[in-house]
Every structure is written in C-alpha cells, then in structure tokens.
Image 1 (cartoon, helix red, strand yellow):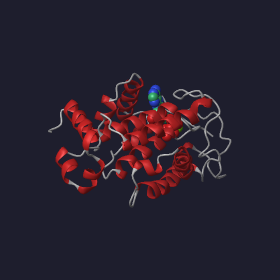
Image 2 (cartoon, helix red, strand yellow):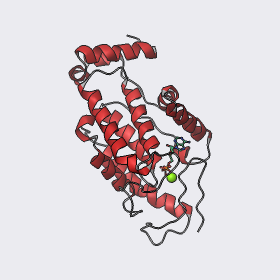
Image 3 (cartoon, helix red, strand yellow):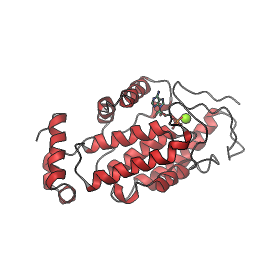
Image 4 (cartoon, helix red, strand yellow):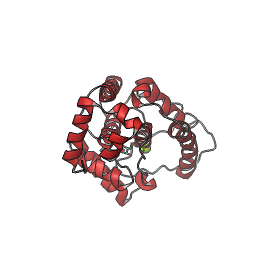
Length: 234
Ligand SMILES: Nc1ncnc2c1ncn2[C@@H]1O[C@H](COP(=O)(O)OP(=O)(O)O)[C@@H](O)[C@H]1O
Ligand SMILES: [Mg+2]
C-alpha cells in the first residue's frame, strides 16, 4: 500500500487504527474519509446553529472530529499522544484548547477589537497550530471555522478542494498560516475573504435584530474600531 503526503501534511507512517478492511490505496482512503466527513458536514454545518458560546467546548470539538473520521480511524476524536510539526507538545493540547474555548467565550460576553472573520481566522489558525488530533486537523479546523461563521449567520469560505494537494492554493494557504504563527492574521483573513467569507456591513450590524442583540455599547464600539482598522465603510 502506498500513501503519499503533500508538503506540510501530517505523515501517517502506520495505518494502525484504520477501520475499513477494504481500503488498499490512498484513493480508497480519500474516498472513505470524504464520505465520513460529508456526514459530519451535514450534521455540523446545516440547519440552525446556536451561538458559538453555546457549543465551543473541548468535548464538543472532540465530538466533531469523531463524527468526521470515526468510521475510518479508531483514534478519531482522541488527542494525539506523539508530537507533530505543526503542533504543540502533546501534553499541552487539552489546556491550549481550553484557553481557546475561554477566548471564544470571552468574545461573546465582552468587547473585543476583532471582526467576525478575524475571529474565525484566529480560531482556524489556533486549531491547526495546536493540532489536537493525529490527523485530519486541517479539515477539522476548517469545519470549526465554518461552523463559527454560520452560527453568526455569515457565509463561510468555500475552502478550495485542493488544499490537501500540492497546489498554488495550498501554497498561499500555508504561507498565510505561517504568517499567523508570527502573529499576523491578515493574510489568512484575506485568503478566507478571497474564497467567499465576508464580514457583515455595519448597516447590517446596526439594522438586523440578530446583530443588534449581539452588539451594543462597548462591544459595538470596539467592533466599529476593528471595522475602521480594516478599512470597511462605517
Ligand atoms: N507549515 C505549516 N504551518 C502551519 N500549519 C500547517 C503547516 N502545514 C500544514 N498546516 C496545517 O495542518 C493541516 C495538515 O494537518 P493534518 O492533520 O494532516 O490535516 P488534514 O489531514 O486534514 O490535511 C493543513 O491543512 C494546515 O491547516
Ligand atoms: Mg493529513
């Protein structure tokens, strides 16, 4: 059996934990993973999604990963126990995820000078940076960012399907993630915008009953500040 991995993909040097016994090639594996993930996409990205502070918890994130790959890999939904690049030291995974969950909770309760796309980009980058699972972290982190945006009634980016391959899209995506490693989220935000993510215009924040409830007082003030920083019409 041959498994090929593009630059930057987590190499799987063993196939222990592979559940379907008929998988023989990378193509078989891609197919069976994609089928499993499409069920998770239906479950987590369609229908009404509650606000992020209601579901953004470590156990829910593990459940999402389990539902994405649990029919294919027996380690789905379990944190990795070996170190990877990218990825934090494995014993820090839980606490780093807890910090991220606390941060997301804070964004909903307190004022923060970040637009919603910036928040989604931060979530996406932090999740791939932590790299909680043995594999599937890129796909998982994109689904979580999408769910975050959809919970806020925004369209999520159409992530190019060739991000797993050796494509130009992947090159600019990885380079955006590397900039985010250095603290600059700008190119990841631009990448997401280029592929269809969009912050709501201020008129929508001020005019729709959904956003009016979320943004008042200091929260609205800091959001406006973030809009000015990004050069949006305010
Ligand atoms: N050099 C890098 N710096 C930061 N993140 C990276 C880098 N290389 C890969 N990644 C992230 O890790 C993901 C690959 O990890 P992996 O666990 O194999 O996920 P998947 O199997 O879904 O592709 C990429 O999609 C990207 O999100
Ligand atoms: Mg991978």
